Structures are given as structure tokens and as C-alpha cells.
Length: 360
Image 1 (tube, rainbow, N blue to C red):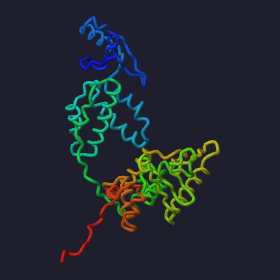
Image 2: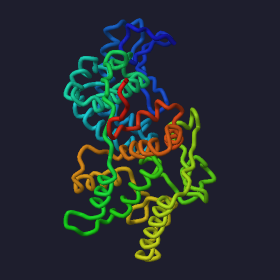
Image 3: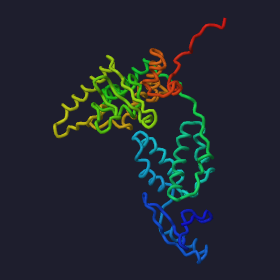
Image 4: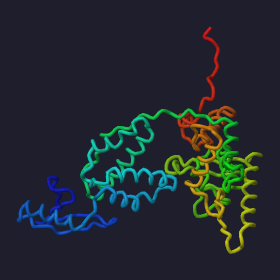
């Protein structure tokens, strides 16, 4: 089999005949077109007919749907939730495009509205690059118009530090609604916020936390006798670093609150309605607290508290900042499961200018 680069995309030459090659999952489907001896005009006529018959749907919305089924669904729930909304925007913006028609100027024009938001710009760029890579894999195009052409934007490091007072207000904002009554998820959110600050872990790790060790997957975070065990998935294939957050009175208090919440919810449910799960953070129905649910509860709490410009990930920065101030960089590095001081330094926020003596 040979592949002539002068031929249309997905058209291959084999044993004196042209074929249209498409993908169905991991399987390659070879559809006969014409013999080489019939000439190129006959090839293009047969190719147009094959595409018109729906031999392959290479429109961008179809490509996105295929990518979500084959690639996107393997990502973590948090990543999937973030990607879903962006993919809808991309599908709408490129609805009239086929995968092979997207060029660098089209991507640049699409990204133009995000030029004042470097982080958002880079997230959309990354998704477009991945979609174009996937299109190449599926034989829908030959090159990637994003890779090495569309540059990433420099993102200014976050400097937001959540004060202790702001943290208390956010928890209160989560527990009590606009009507002054307790919210359904408020106490669980308050415990999640406290756990994030006391352990320095991100929301994905916390939502995966279980009441006991999983013998089939020891890397899953769990509550143990000596403390709470975490191993970040980002380092699983590199340093493999793990950390045991030893018990302190405040951390024990959070766990006891969670146990009481669990027991109270079980009592309120009839035996036939009870859902028993190993997850520490759960919804009212007993199922695992999802990323989207936790994110929504957090945003509402922040709004009620009137605390501007904060994200849940700022709790990790606050934890490592306070840890560095109290116990030094190595302690903060251990908590963050980082392999270098510079990685930890990205999280340590200067709450006020450092003081020093004059030169002389």
C-alpha cells in the first residue's frame, strides 16, 4: 500500500485501485472508489459521491462527538466538565467547517475574543490542537494548524490570597442561603473547604477521598488510622510522591463532623432508600459529591459572602502559603507533593511585602 500526498485526504492507493479509508473506532474501513487506470477525474467523481452518501461525517461537530466518545470520556470528571462547555462553543463556532477545512487563520480568528483572557485563550487553543491531532489520526486531515503556529499566551501568576476572615465568610455563605435558612449542601461544603485548607489538596483528590483503603487501588486517597493518605495522579507516573497528612485536632474535628453528617443522613432515609458509599464527601442522596455540584455550591457561597476574585484552587495556595510561613518551604513542598521548591513557590503567595533592613 502506498500513500500519495498529492491525493485527497483519506484516499489511498492499493493494488492499482483508489480507496477511501475511514475509521470506525479503532477499525479502518476501506471503501473502493475507482481503478488507477480510469484516471483522476473518475476518482474525484467517485469520491464526491462517497462523501455525499455519508460514508464519513467529518464535520467539526461530528468530530467533537467522536473525540468525546473515544478520548474525552477517559479524562477525570473535573476535566470532562470543563471541556464540555468549551467543546460546545467550538462546535457552534465551527459548525459549517469540515475537519480538513480548518486552517490556522480560522483558529486565530476564533481565539481573538479571548486575547484579554490568557488562561481561557490557552485552554481553547489546547482543545483545538487536540481536536486537529485527532482529525489527523482519523484520516480527516494531514497537518495540525494549531501546533507550532498558534502560540500560547503568557499567563500572569495568581496572587490572590484568601484571608482567614474571608474563609469564614465563605463557609457561612455556603451554610446559609439568601433567605437565611440552612442550605442542603452547606455543611458538606464547609467540611470540604476545611479539608482543602487543612490538607492542601485539590478538589479532585478530595472528592475521591474514601473512608478506607481500597485494596484494588492503593493510590486512591483514604482516611487511615495515622491520618489521611493522598497520592496525586499528576505524579503517579513520575515521582510517585505520596503524603500522609497526620492528625491534628482541627483535622480530626472535620472528620468527626463528616461522620455525624453521614449518620444523620442515614437515619433520615428509609432502609430501602439508603445509599451506602465509601466516599467521604457525598450528596443528600448518599452518592459521591460531583465536581459540578461542589463547584456550583462554592460559587454560590462566594457570592453570598461577597468575597471577590477567589477560586477553589486558591485554598490550596492558602494552605501551602501558611504552611511555608509556619514550618518552612520543605514542609510546604511535602504537603504539595512537589518534586522541586519552584513548583511549591508557584503556590506560595506573599500576603504582604517582606521586610528587610536598609543596605547600611
